[in-house]
Structures are given as structure tokens and as C-alpha cells.
Length: 370
Image 1 (cartoon, helix red, strand yellow):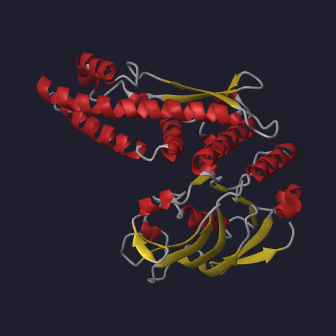
Image 2 (cartoon, one colour):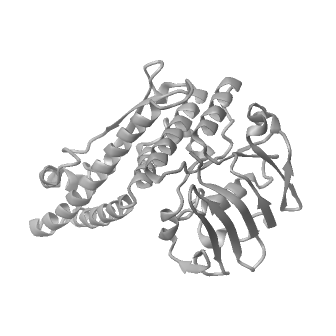
Image 3 (tube, one colour):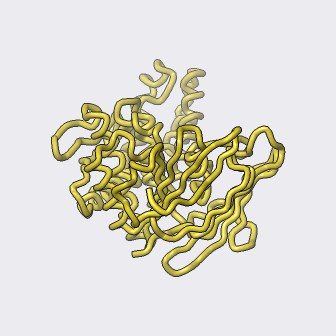
């Protein structure tokens, strides 16, 4: 099936790009150039075709080309399987991010109705060996891609937990205050648990649909959640039972905020944290591809994929398998690398952009081949 694709992209005063205009087709986009040339800045602009702060989680004021005071703007034509949309997003100096969809002002959430964008960035490469917080955030982003209401549940849970933690630190013992907050945490926490487990089930099923022998992961949600995370009454009871322990610690020690994502490299039966750097990278890519396959079923088209420095730590056979998976999926994947040779296995299945930097300004040139 044809995926979502950008057929036009324009940048104005965005990061290192003073001005750029690209005409594209639906094929994957291979972006190459030296470190610091502006490749990731280009992908960041594409990530703003979705709600939120983009792949770097940057504030609107940080996206403007320095040291100018002109604000920034990104425009695109988004082609889907049955419709085409014009998107503009920008921020004036000192202002917040604005969106215009098909010529009319729109809220950022409107972008989620016409587009899905998934990304993988180098900062995620240490996901399996760092703390559980990063893995929860990774899983929650996947759950959000399937269920937009996941964000509201997460905010409600965090707000109630902050208030409960304040009571714990102040050693307040009023059971009515605790009961009200724990009920809110239990209700929102049950939604979080259900969405997370549903997302894992979708990923498991989608991994089985891979076109190549690309690595797969067996996934599980673990951690001291204290009770069935999908049962509000049980979770509320566990929170109530743990008040004394939590008061001694000054914080909530059980609940969905303590969950962890576990992964096993299926082919070897080895935990992801014990795998090689290349295997860990391959597992991350496999999950992003599985997320994309599952979304294609829901959305009617594969999402846009942003894979920054994706070839790093992958050998030639795994790079070839990755490119085959992307092409089989039909996704317009934007991939970056330092050298054109990293994309040689793509051949004419992709379009090529070379990014170079001179005096702090990026330039993008179209190339016919890697």
C-alpha cells in the first residue's frame, strides 16, 4: 500500500537551514553528509508534521536560525493514499508554534488525524542499558501512536501522583485526601497499563509479519507495579496499603510509573541489555518497523519514518535487510548517514539528498544515485 509521503518540503530560517525547497516522490529519502552539516535538522523539520515538540523535544524558540530574529517556518505537501494536504507550521520570535492545515488555522492535534510520524534517533541507542524511565517513555510513545488518549491518561496520573507525593513529604495522614488522589491514580493508571499491554501485543503480532530475517524481540512489561495495572480497584488498594512505606520514602514506590519494558533477542534467547551494540540497534529498529506495520493496518497507510544515523552499528547484511523491510512496507523513510556508500544497497529504490554546511548555513543538493 502507498505510504504517507512528503512531495514538497520548504524550510525558512529553520536551525542551520536559511532557506530550502525540495520536490520529492514517494520513495525513501537517503540523506548523507558530514557530521554537523544539518542532516538531523532536516529530519527534525519533518518530525513537526506531527503534534508536539518533534524528535529533539525542542521549544519553538530553539528552532529558529541563530542569531536571527526572524522566527522560522516549515511547509509541506503531505500525500496520503486517498488525499493530499498542505501543512504549514511556524513560530514568530518569542511566540509559540502555530499550525495551518489546508490554508486554515488548526490546533497541533489536527496533524494526528492526517499523519503518523515515527522516529529513531541516536540518543535512543542506549535504551536497553540505561534506566527504566527511558524505556517507559519509549513504550508510551508507541502506545500513543495507537491510542491518542494515552497522553491524557499519563498527564492525569502524573498530576495525581505529584499531589500524593507532596502529601507524603509533608507527612499528611488524612485518609480522605489520600483516597481521592489514589482513586484518580488508579483510574488513569489502569488506562496506562491497558494501553501499554495492547501496544506490546500489537508489536508482537507485527514483528511476525516481517519480510526478512530482521531481528525480533520478545517483549514484556515488568516492574513493581504493586497490583494488576489494568484493575483500578486493585491498584487503588495497593496504593492505600503502601502509604506507610511510601511516607518513609517520601514518594510513591509502586504503580505504572515504576514499570519497565523488557526485551529478549528471540534468535539467541538473550536479554537486550546483554546483546552487542549492533544487536541492540537492530532490535530498536525492529520495534520501530513493527510499530509502522501495525499503524499501517489502523491508518490505511504506513507512517513517515525518520531514522537518524540508522546505519550506525549495522553491518552490510542488516542494512540491506532494513532497506528491504522499508521498501516492502511502502514507507517514505528519511534516513541519514555520513556517507553515500551506506545506502548503496538501496539503488534506485530511493532518492538521495546531500547536505553540506558552509559558514553555519546548510545546503541541500539532490543526487541521482548514492
